[in-house]
Image: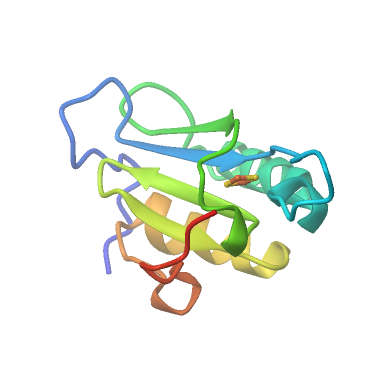
Length: 118
Ligand code: FES
C-alpha cells in the first residue's frame, strides 16, 4: 500500500475522477436518488477535501445524471480505471476514498456486478 496523496495514474487533469449518479427516475422506477445517493456524494466530497486529495493532479468528485445502471443504485464510477461501485453507508464511502481514490486499490467488496444495468 502506498501513502501517496498524489493519485495520478493518468495523464489527465485529475489523477482520479469519481462520478456519483444522483438521478431520480420518474414513474416509480428504482433509481439512485431513492437510495440516498446524495448522502454518499456529500460524504465523499468532504472526505476527499479533508484528506487533502482534491484538486488538479489529484481527485475530483462530481455529480452525474443517470449512468444507466439504476438497478444497482446508488452507483458511482471511478476513472481512469472505470471501476464501478455500489455503496450503502458512509463507511463504504470512506473505504472507497481511502483505498481507491487515495491509494489506487480497488474495493472488491463494493464492486457493482458486471451484469447490472437499468
Ligand atoms: S438512476 Fe442512477 S444509474 Fe440510473
